[in-house]
Image (cartoon, rainbow, N blue to C red):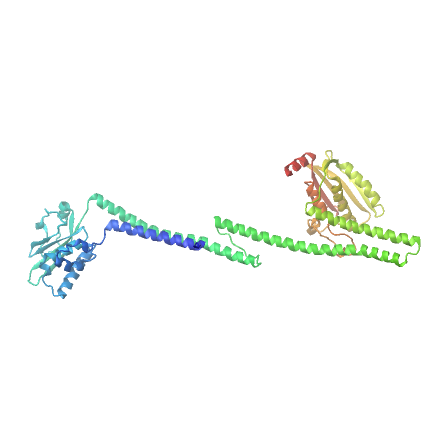
Length: 505
């Protein structure tokens, strides 16, 4: 058998309706207890036909007003049927009396002589104190209440067909003090339940709306996001679980927008990288191809020409090899497949060795290197091979993009809290502020106009940043006061680096 499934809105409405029905049932029960039930024909002596004839006239009497009104209606109905002697028939009054609620009773006088006395009244009730026929305003209620705990509520005067004066008195008996208090309490409970039902109904409606409306909004927003509309914003209007769900949805939507932006940027950078790499590879590959064809065609007829061709092929092959190595290193760093071997290094000695090497390598490019500002505590944990790649990429970037000659590159260190700061500055023209953070992004190249003439993939500084992060450091760029670009690298002290390595492991 398939289990019936209800949605949350249906469950909320069913809960509200069920609570309302239960409250109404409780109200009806309290009202029944407080005010009694309507008496049926079971209260009438079935053995007396006259009583049965009169009984239907008094069906459902439950108040003094209804008792008086029903007596008149019964009298008129019986007259229309041709029964003109009912007023002087005790069965009529007995049937009426038994049809009334327990606290309502009858006393009937014919020609000022007691004719019918309800058995609900005390046997010793003083009939002499009752008003006479026609004395409708002189009710002796105080005497009756003090002695017999009952009061006269109505006096109905009739003339029979025989000319008899019939005076019928409807009396309302009062219960004991405890009974009266009980009824008062039940009445108050009934009133409270009516008011609370109304209030709770209104509150429940707003509660249901406060749940279903945000859920409908979230469903609509989810459908919009599924269709690709990430600009559909959900307003958070509460601090409850629904509000938390809305906040979570908004956070997801914003993150999706960011991811889409990153994906678009990555795709743009990837296309740019492919274009740059293709161009950078095309030139040396074309040169190698042409020189190889020249050798095969016999163009390099002399040993000197053959040597020039081979040197050119070797030089272009090195360019291709450098680009491929850079791409491989970037891929390994990006996928975290590159391994690092750290050792304790004295930073000043490391920089001095780099300076000596670079002065030889860049001797023909009018590049000068200056060491300054060494700090006392300069021992750091480095992977020498990878960190050398950081320094080489930073310096090569400066040599490529700074036109000023002689180019002066200054290397200095500064002691900072919990570490050492390495500063690489040049005397160029700096970089626009908008590009300072972007130069470390993958595939980013600032001078797009020079991409055709300056070889490179735009991965150098991105690789440097990833390597520095692996050293638990930080790298950033800023323009110096003298106009050049400054690359700053913060490295943790030896103690801090070991602590961070232990934490990572």
